Length: 405
Ligand SMILES: Nc1nc2c(c(=O)[nH]1)N[C@H]1C(S)=C(S)[C@@H](COP(=O)(O)OP(=O)(O)OC[C@H]3O[C@@H](n4cnc5c(N)ncnc54)[C@H](O)[C@@H]3O)O[C@H]1N2
Ligand code: MOO
Image 1 (cartoon, rainbow, N blue to C red):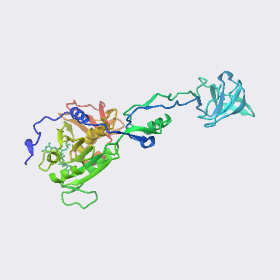
Image 2: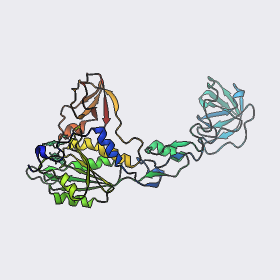
Image 3: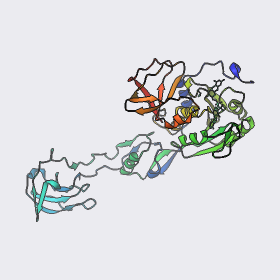
Image 4: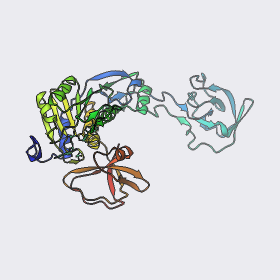
């Protein structure tokens, strides 16, 4: 009971609010350096500089349909067919009055043409084209004007934007082969606890498979490809501090377990051994209260609680925001969505609660088992239902904020 009960370190201090804890953590986030990468290699990366258009798109008017390029003034025809404009093979001449050119989707509109008739509305007979349909409204509706998408020098993507497949396409269309993105932080994940065994190995009485490390690494892998896993490490200060030494060069060190007040909770003494400075410990959230955040030089150490759900929730509230902030994300914190609650929820106390929830036809409802050690409900949950501290009860049908997981 050396550090147990109310005599544990910091036990008398009030819990930090979630907002204050996240603010303090994000204050510790140092931007990683930038690197220039081929656009195709940037999925999920954050831009370190704005992307401006090096060209105009479309550079010239294009047809949006397969059909016939005409002068709108000549409606309703007939026309004489004088040539073709295909994608990549523009018609070289101009279109004189009462002339038309066969045109395909994405092909350049010939000079002097200003409208396209869709081929379904036209009949070609020898070199004569006749129109038999409803005129396009407006007449130029099938023409994509120059600069419809963007113009040269326009900003296409802001610094801090996260590259998605569509943003990659936009950067390439804007004329870029490479863009400047932030380097992905290096993360080390340490499982700690005497009861932990490697996946699939024989279990001594009281032992369990170490599942937090792979889960935390997989969560972080959404935001960085540089992840090292260490452990499981036994409950000895030297073993934990030695594992932390191995991870000295990581930008972020994540541990799971040993964050609470029990006699075998060794995170605080191990951090002291390696010379880390604890920034804060214990936040008014449920689950995840015993989270500890420390720094060792430029490294940020996140001591997540061992309970699997607590580790999962604190990873969403702290580890992922830190990973985003270090890469210059415009919005590092999880984004809440409003959903109707399909069941009544009780009032909350001093801690903000993060209930594992599932979406249904009438809204979102908590799963039945909310124990912070239970993985089945976590694995079947779609989201965390956010219940701020000191909230009034929620009636069925009222909105709640959720974080997708
Ligand atoms: N007297 C008090 N006891 C506890 C308090 C408290 O305030 N006073 N807080 C509770 C809360 S809340 C949490 S959360 C847990 C967190 O404790 P620790 O961070 O010290 O975690 P451990 O005791 O090491 O483990 C808790 C639980 O999780 C299992 N675990 C640990 N690591 C892994 C892993 N890598 N993979 C799978 N499962 C893991 C471990 O076996 C335990 O069952 O403390 C409460 N106690
Ligand atoms: O806060 Mo602990 O994380 O309730 O289980």
